[in-house]
Image (cartoon, rainbow, N blue to C red; front, side):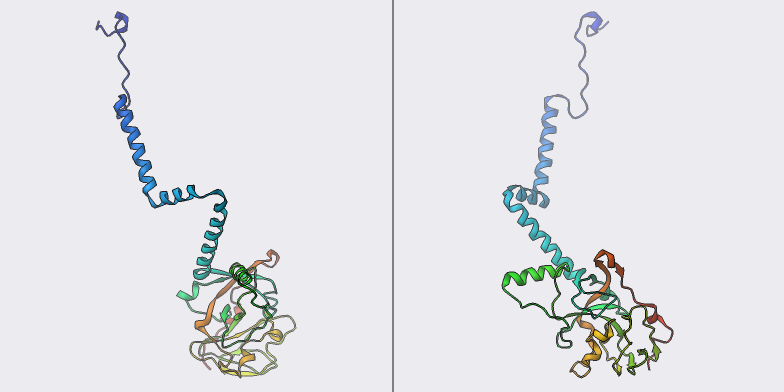
Length: 276
């Protein structure tokens, strides 16, 4: 037998180490590779952020997280969705005072406004406020109200309004003060959203909506200072499409009043797209 055979008293052969790690040199190489991987991770931008975060004192972590959350809220508000607080009863019972709605700020960038949509718009130079707002106060009070308005826990800017779109550019919208509101000669059946007991309009009007403008009305017609209320003003009661902030699509608070805000079926009646 070979002298290395243990039965002959020779030393047993050493077990072969896994490939690439045998012997001290292999262990050193593996350790060096780990060190290189860790260094590459630290040099990556995410690694730089981790190093910066680890160096922060404990007391600074919460303020940093708050600032990051506010920046994200600003970004979402500016580009995607914004929460709005309902300050008046002009859209009852669809929307009640204190409701919070989410407003889609993306759809109208790629699509068009539809009749029946509930929209939020800036009424500066065309509408006057329906609600009483507190004095502006000091810088801190204004900042708190501004941040609160981002998430719908404070009243919106006093120039912002929420109404239902009744007439689009080119539409002939009319009411005689007694019967239904008509769009291009089609009588609207508004019982699905009109405030109980309200007439469709106790004000007579007969308008053709100009290009780039909208005719809007509140669902609580007897309490809504809408397009009808501003007919004698320079804007004629019309809302520029360019001033529309977005489409309110859901009530999210209080939970008991959760509901979607889609366009009612009355705006899909045959003939409503005609021009009269």
